[in-house]
Length: 344
Image (cartoon, rainbow, N blue to C red; front, side, top):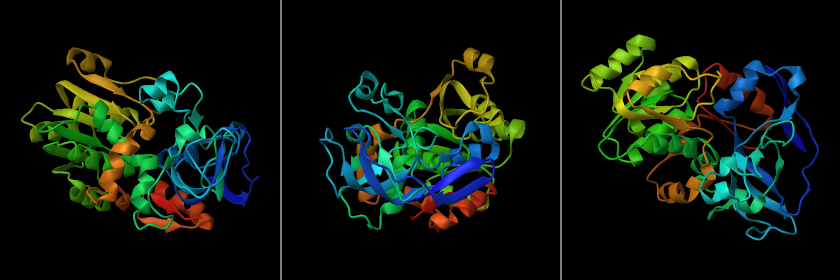
C-alpha cells in the first residue's frame, strides 16, 4: 500500500510501505477513508534528524474495519470507526479513570515502532479499547467534523476541562491553530461568558469569532498580557487554554491567568522546563494538562456533532489525496492552511 513517510525535517515522501496485518489477537486493520495532518506533526517536520528513524506519519483517522484479531469483541468487519491518536486497552486502571493516553498497554500512532494513518490502511493495536464505532456511513457529510474526534476537538475540550471552564467564566485561548479553534468551541459549549482568542491570522480569527470568540488579542508578550488584563477589569481570565507549547505561549498563559485560575496545557511542550513557576505559585494558579484522552470524550462530544450543535470540521480548509500530503505539510508549516484533510 502507499503511505506517508517522513525521513527527516522537510523530507516527506509518498511511498510503498508494508501492508498492515493482524499481529496480535487484539488487533484490527482499518482501511483509511479520512486522515489529516496535525499541528504536532509540524514539530518533526521542522526538527527530525535522519538518525531518529523514518516513520509512517499520521495519528488521526476514520476508516472501515477490514480485519479483526481473534480476541476482538466489540467490532466487526465493515464498521465505520474513528481512531484516536493513542491506542489503549480500555480496561487498565488508567483507562478506567478516563485517562487512556496513560494506558499501561497503550501507545501512540505515527512513530518508528507503530506506523501511522496518513496511508491507505493502518493496524490498530488494542482495537476494542481504541476504536469507536460511528453510526454513519463512510461518506457521510459530517466526516470532517467526526474526524476531529480523533484529536483536535477532543484536545481542545481537554484543555477546557482541565482549565475548569464553566458557565459565566472568562477564558483565553492561546493559539489560533486547529486545537485552539476547537478550544473556542469547547469553551463556548461549556458556558464561558467571555472567550478571548490570542491569535493574529485573519482567516483563523474570523473562524474563531464564528465559533464563539468574543474578543481577539493579536499582540504578543507583555503587550498581550496588558491587553488581556484590560479586557478583564485588570484581573486576568479564570481559565487559559494553552494550545501551542512554546516557552513564550506558556509564559503568556500563566501571566494572563487571574489569581486562583487555571491553565490547561495541551500544546506539546518544546522545552523541558515550564516558565513562570513562581508567579503560578504565588497566585495560586493551577497548571495541568497533557496528551488528551480523546477516547474518553467521544461519547460526550459525538451527539453535538451529529445534531449540528458544533461544527469543528470547519477547521479543515484544504483537502488532498495522498499525493498532496507533502505539499499539505508545507502549506500548514507556512501558515497557508489551518488543517489539511487527507482522503487516501
